[in-house]
Length: 172
Image (cartoon, rainbow, N blue to C red; front, top):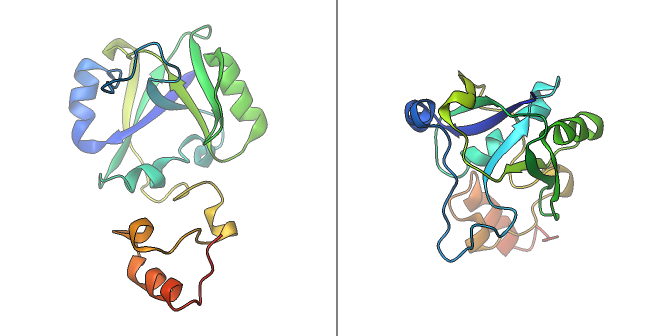
């Protein structure tokens, strides 16, 4: 049974431990429309690869993230692939082996069902500075846009916006 980790807000940890991870509901989206489900990452030997989404998810509003570790049967169907690319249907064991072999940032797994509390093995505090922001390898490519809407509320957003408006920063 492969182990996966779901990164969640620390304030929700007690409720998740008690009731499990519920399938998100999106108004207007049919429940069978793939991929739709609980996001998780396979636990592999590289701690950074396993927890690579932590910094990006922290940008969405929570201060402290925790890791919700869960076990899935090896033959459970999941959707897996790289960020912003089409996902493939595969088993949980295959998804773990793909990440272990690829070792690339931006991998994601979507479990198309709720996770019962009995499948959760641990809830652990995580270091809060692991992973990437914006998109994988963003620092290699630079800032892709410095306009008001893209930089609103971002770290050092005003400085980036000022440089962008002055023409010193080219968008990519």
